[in-house]
Image: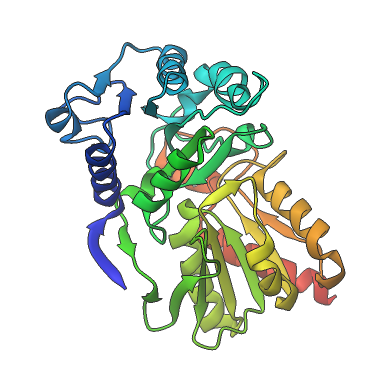
Length: 340
């Protein structure tokens, strides 16, 4: 069902609840104090209610994450807001060599409860250095967990779980999702509904009433609306039934809840907004090949953005960043190629 809250409001409410419940939780970032409340208003109201634990910082992403690491290693918890996810490159060293390694490099496990929030993605006309989806650059780092914001998942539950887990987390927030409405399990529209495929609520399964799932699309929260629009087009125009599996935890990738869907589908494709090469989609394909190669009918395919920078001009940006029609064309192309 459609909730009245936008995803950005749900995220803001989740932060307020987490801060009220945990006096050891801090938030750091640029321009996060009221009345501004962050570039996308995610932190609105937090500094007014919790003035001693919401800290506006200088423009130094490495320094921000470094302070957060210090807080986490001294018994506190920290959430960092990177104003645009593109700037996460500036704190990569702190994440790779301090946040993640501190969990296990001191001879015993240490909790490093830090969440680095990164607004990502295009379709907003922000240009080549403010529109990227850099998830792939953080895959494969031991003890670093990656999650993606989604209209289908309970944001408060996800953030609470990753903070309790004790491993550092990159929390990617696709910017177009901020304005979407949150959903709860049940009908989405006249064609599709969703539920969760696992007890932890990591995998949301969106399917038609028939639920046959000739095509299985695997994706993260940023592509939900475009994947569902593509699924509707394929169902109505081609009579092709599509199941969309949306995961919250991108890495470590947990394939077990979707193995049955992957084995039943004629074709499995991963849809992501990042550029080709060393991708999350490649990690998904590898994991599925290891887990159920003998049951996959075809190799796992991928649909992603073009292998180039993202233009600032909106009409050019839409040619580069994967859109609904790209997903439709990708599915049709795969089906045609495999029936020749």
